[in-house]
Every structure is written in C-alpha cells, then in structure tokens.
Amino acid sequence: MTFFYIVLAFLVGVLVGWFIWGRLRGELDSLRGDLDRTRSERDRLRADADRLTGELDACGKTRADLERRLRETSAPSAKPSSSAPAALVSTAAKAKSAPAAKPTPAKPAAAKPAAAKPAAAKSAAAKPAASKPAAAKAAPKAAASKPAVPKKAAPAAGKADNLRRLIGIGPVNDKLLKGLGVTTYAQIAGWTAADVKRIENTLNFDGRIAREKWVEQAKLLAAGDEKEFARQFPSAGTANNS
Image (tube, rainbow, N blue to C red; front, side, top):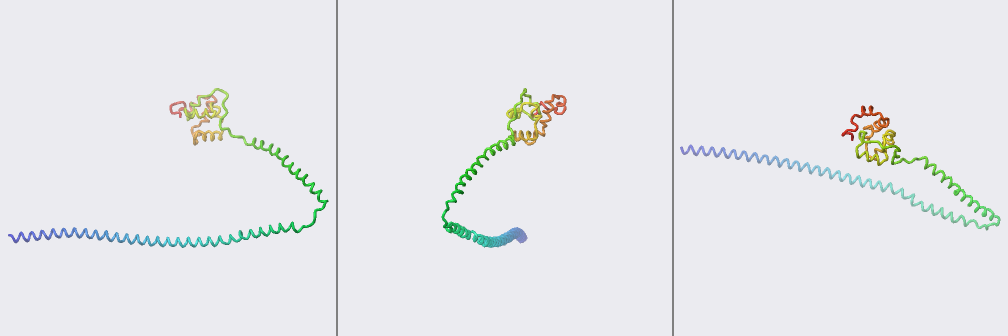
C-alpha cells in the first residue's frame, strides 16, 4: 500500500512538473518571438537610417553642384560692369580734350547771338508760366468730372417714417440708418445697387438687404399700398421682424 502511494505521488509530481515546464517553455518561446521582432525592427530602422544618410549626402552634392553653377553663371556678368568705368573714363577724357582743341579767340560779332540767348531764355520761362493757369483750369474740371460718393445720405425734407415696419430693421439698424441720414421709405425705395452696396459695407451686412427685400418693402409703403404690403410681408411689424 505504501508503494502504491509512492508511485502515485511520483506520477502527480511528474504531471505537475510537466505542466509547469510547459508554461515556462511557452513564455520562453513568446520572449524569443518578441526578441526576434525587436531585432527585425532594429534592422529596419538601421536600413532607413542608411537610406536617409544616402539621400542627405545626395542632397549635399546637389547643393554643392548648384552653388558651383551659380558662381560660374554670375562670374561672366561681372565683366561688363568692370569694363563700364573704363568706357566712362575714356568718354570723359574725350569730353575734356575736346574744348582744349579749340584755341580760336572769340570774335566781337559773336556777342549778338549771346545777347539773343537771354531773350530766348525769357520766352522759354514765360511759356511754363503761361501754361500754369491752363493746368490750374484743367484741374478743377478733372476734379468736377469725378463726383465724390457721399458717405451720408441727404436728410429727407418731410416727416420721418417708422422704418421699423420693414422686415430686417430693428432698433439697432433703425438707429444706424438714421445716423446715415436715412429716415423715410422714399429714400430706401430709391436706393440703387451702388447705394445698397455702400449701406451694406457700412452696416457690415452681406446681401441681407436683397434677401429681406428692403427696397421692395419701402416702395409699397412709400406708395401707401398697405394692403399689398400686408399680403406680401405678413410678418412685418411683428416680434420676429428683425
């Protein structure tokens, strides 16, 4: 009976040892796989580093070649500039030597043309003076041909209208429009495309006047057509007006 227990304990020990050895062997294989992957990643990084080093060397060679070509192309352009002073010196020398080659004395008869020169100078000075009034007259005409665009509309002569009846005009826009001199429906009804653009630039709008049809609303109210205004713009004058 004792022998049987000994054999049983031996078998259990062998099984437990085999199980533990299997687990340790699996972990060892996993560590070996991680090590192999790390080595392959290291080799790949080394290959990338070598490739980048080669590209960097090629870029350095290309840069040196470009700099050499630039120096070669800029070197001939400096030659004409260096020869230019010599040409200038030669022309200056010729100009100096030319007066020295005329030793003839001045004749008394040459005094008459010399006296005529101041008269010609006076007439030449009189021409610019006479042309200045003509230029001064032309300047007001040119200025009159370019009418300045007024930044502020002319105030209406009649009684101010309630602009807040128009859709899109609330307390803030009403105050801004009055600051620009716009107080009646007739003024808004007479706006041109340039006026609309100017007002939108001043009020920081972007197509809002056309979208909300301010001009169309103002035309109906200026004409007194309340029925058509109420039919086309039923939300005018309500809480959602602006």
